[in-house]
Length: 65
Image (cartoon, rainbow, N blue to C red; front, side, top):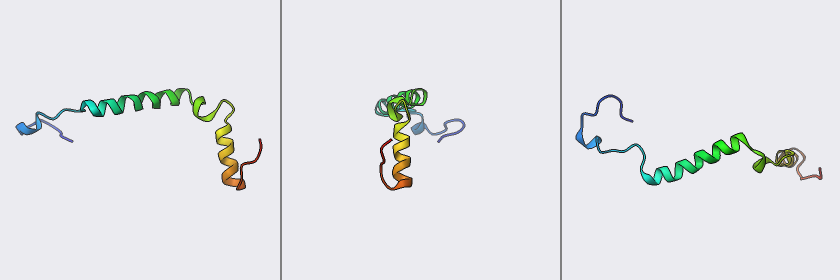
């Protein structure tokens, strides 16, 4: 991180994000916002993923719901 004014000329050529970093960051940002607003594709509409994980952790097996 650089705070304040840039005194060295070598630091003035640094960019905030390269094209490769933007190509990775932007889709992850979109997916994070999407699944934060609409988590049903991950958890199911009835919360079945969370229920199965709870059963496996606390009962030692996946029971029928």
